[in-house]
Image 1 (cartoon, one colour):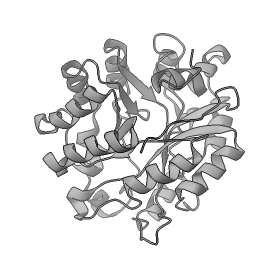
Image 2 (cartoon, helix red, strand yellow):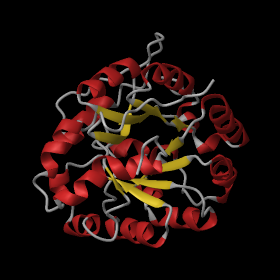
Image 3 (cartoon, helix red, strand yellow):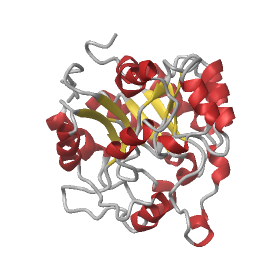
Length: 297
């Protein structure tokens, strides 16, 4: 089974490179207990978990396409993700005019995780994999994870890494036991050096390591930055500077839905000094090229 995409680039105004599905259509209970704390952290009021079809309907109304994924924290919970990777891919295939599914495999699964990644690539044609070093408790440059990157590089898949501060566990006792040190983007530089043909996305403005992220993306040709998880009006000046210049072809729009809505993100970018001629690339063109979408220029 493959996931052939039918996205009409002329019909969409943007490609959101970072969205989450937290709810299953199959009656399973997802990890919703942390959503209230995250909603408070993001000032979102409430955060309703979305199913794949609900996400598709929402983005279709906005005339946008979206990359989406589940969260696999098997090493902490001992449980498989809800919704499962299979559910995300199978349902996204029914909405391939707007949805681009990525997989999520906890590196702590070891050899089984590598086999799972290869299965998802072979069965569904997975174009990318989301990693969350803080939630999954690993440094991206831990050599034990390298067999997983090898599988991704071999098949031309994208590795998307959370970086910097996280809303997961924020404000809860001890931050939920999560350690921010894992998500310093400088560790991703080792991955980019050791896997030079692996496309990498550093997700989010990387507070408090913004300059490290910009340095890695400037130095390594295959490293991109998605701007999700922050309202653009809070972007630091140096991020805006690089978005307007050296990294204008490597910056990607992302919302982090449902933590932040694409409508809010789009409205707030007008409060920044990002140039109008740069926004087209950030909104859509850079992502279309990275994802190798039909019609990308």
